[in-house]
Image (cartoon, rainbow, N blue to C red):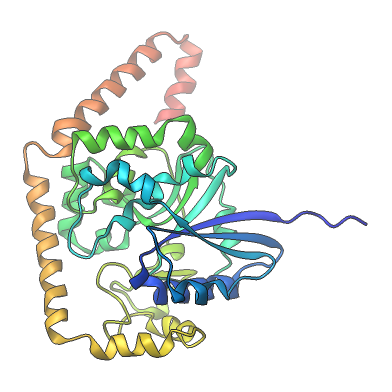
Length: 341
């Protein structure tokens, strides 16, 4: 009897060589909890990375769990001069923008940040029905927890905080990305406006606005606020400065260390925690204050994205909808209004 071919699930990470130990923790947790009835293609997007640590990560490979390091230097070079980088951000944060055009063989794919631990079956996340939307994502927990960020998303981007998603865990409808020329839209907007608060995450949010399938928050739980007993995370995202390899007593840190102990990088990660100085922690605290101040400054600007571009775009869309509405019959109008409102 012929064996049924396994479903391919493509999963993308982005990393530089300094991040490989933490990426190994994420990949270890992903592999341990994944349904083995599928075939997993793991791609690590990078720029000219070839170190012994890469070879260590390759050791996680099995027949249905392949890891490929993919150089995206050529792609990033095309837009590098226009990219905004700040604090702990590197060019790696923009790599996900290139996935749709680089992988025409895939209809959809997962992108996951390297500062994550998976406790659930990643195939469950991949199989979420996107209902034709560009992207599947989870509202950003950091935005929900910080009032200044809520003001920023509303006033600077024109997006309610509850609908502003975190780009560290996204399910991408690659077919629709290509159909709507997402990459070209990104490049055009990059030339029009420079986001400085959340950078590529802001670009993704404004381009994908109203084309998002919202996924259960347990697939992108952040160690921000709340009590651990109230959460049942399937994926933990140690976002912003909340890294267990920099700080002790981080919410959900036990999951990170559980999988870290299973990697060859465990001792090195422990050394990183020990070596993280008070000066570095003070710099983190200052960076957080600076980010909050920057968010409020951008929200107040009269020439921010929403006031200079986004609002006019909305008005044009409303005009298009109105013209479409007036062309409908009475019966059609009723169903159109029912669907829209």
